[in-house]
Image (cartoon, rainbow, N blue to C red; front, side, top):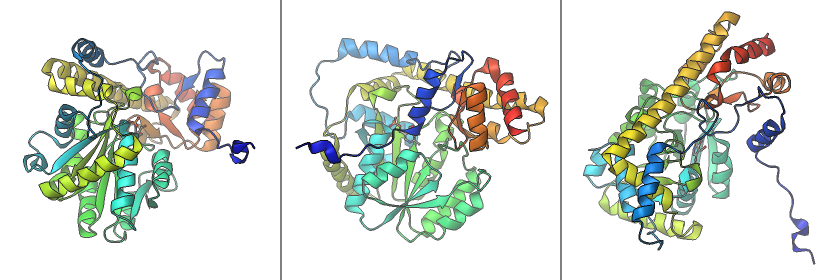
Length: 398
Ligand code: PLP
């Protein structure tokens, strides 16, 4: 008997397929704007210097490889809570906030998905349309019922009125996933005024907010990017946050992240965290140690922390410079206004507004690889060749 005879093949991740096509392309001027990792001016994703230094110290000081507890490294938890919620956050002072270390932001999302399905059954989780595609598959795997609120209009521009209108009709008590900053895939973030309106609706409809915070530091600054999270935490009794250290610490493959919960009081916090540990026990038992130990060391050490903050700032500034640079390069083609949104968006990604047909032409004629939705990884741009790309965009949009 062939046990696997009935196993069907699932198609691979389309973004990784794009990477294969890029790698096979012999054109030396090719450009990969697909995969979502940060790249420097040389097109590389190097290990941050602060991480290298922390790793060196860890190798010298580490005493054991025995398991860490179900919630992970307590120092990591303490430091990350302060990074996300801000030092002196009332939720921290009141001891209503807790941190559970997870394998990356994805691990945090799966943990919260399983927790919500188990402990808050029958409620839907509302996602932005569009959202990071893994949100869709991951919450389906967790057997959560998912619904959508609009985020962009037919022309792929941010549509706040449509978003607010749908949010205000969500059944009382449902859950809503919000991108804390640097919305993936669109790059469109809400203004502070928009966030206040979302908060009013969340409060009025008694919704449970779940923030996906994967790009802290990539938008306007470490504290600035946490503004919406902190607004909600200061105003509401209960908030969930998934945090990723993949991008801002460059720790992608070390799988470092956390699920943060703010509860109504200390007793409720203990109840919820007991469920997190119990659910995690069936997923990965205890989290991997290395990346979190690196993050804890960097955040707790003033010298390493300063170096890390400089490195995050350099990444943020490179992305902002490339955004403005591309719009400037489009200006001689009379396209600065049409693509002005690229400079206003935040984070690594941009919904450029290019159609699938235009994207395919760029791929075929210019070896420029971006996702068919028109999403580009801005960090993949080459500052020296923005003029060339602008000319190609002008040609395919003519
Ligand atoms: N959430 C969003 C919106 C993301 O874009 C990502 C990574 O691309 C993640 C979460 C999770 O990242 P990781 O699991 O690598 O920490």
